[in-house]
Length: 224
Ligand SMILES: Nc1ncnc2c1ncn2[C@@H]1O[C@H](COP(=O)(O)OP(=O)(O)OP(=O)(O)O)[C@@H](O)[C@H]1O
Ligand SMILES: [Mg+2]
Image 1 (cartoon, helix red, strand yellow):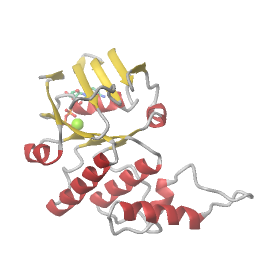
Image 2 (cartoon, helix red, strand yellow):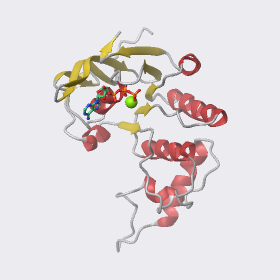
Image 3 (tube, protein in one colour):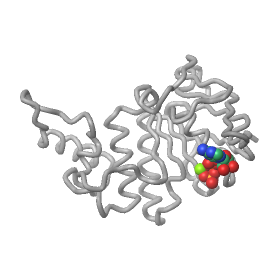
């Protein structure tokens, strides 16, 4: 693509074992702004392990992680998040008894001078964010009862509100209906146009062709 800038995020020859299980033998991947990168591979190929290395959940046994061309280590997920990364896992990680806005602003709610949460401001910002994603959800709604697809949208909104510019989605479409997949794809395309770097893990080739500019295929913990 004639791209002279370094990738936003890159993993080079990373490996990871758990005891005697080699989950990832040699994982390499580069994510550029404005691109959707698909990661394919059968069950157990090491895809989720690779994602967790990118996200600071695990540290690689060997290999290198680079952010904007600079070698980095993420000691934990918070460090990855501070570097602009957000991961949307297949199993949503939201709190059911809190509102959408409370989930998005968890731990960093806007407060007034005497420490009260500014719900008006929080809800207004979240409504604007949800509207910008083109979804019919309101900030004050409780998460309980939301479909998986809607919960993913809330996770995406949360990522944007944290100013994430790398979004990693681990098999986001596995539990979605066809219309929900279409809605997710249009959101992903909009994020790409906003110059996010996106990693999209899937089993399905039709999704790859609908959405992505680059492709990595893994088998038995190796890039093939
Ligand atoms: N924490 C762990 N402890 C032990 N083995 C693990 C661990 N995590 C992953 N593995 C093993 O490592 C291999 C790769 O797993 P991983 O979850 O990365 O594959 P995957 O490509 O995401 O598969 P799937 O398509 O089923 O999600 C598998 O054999 C798995 O059983
Ligand atoms: Mg997996």
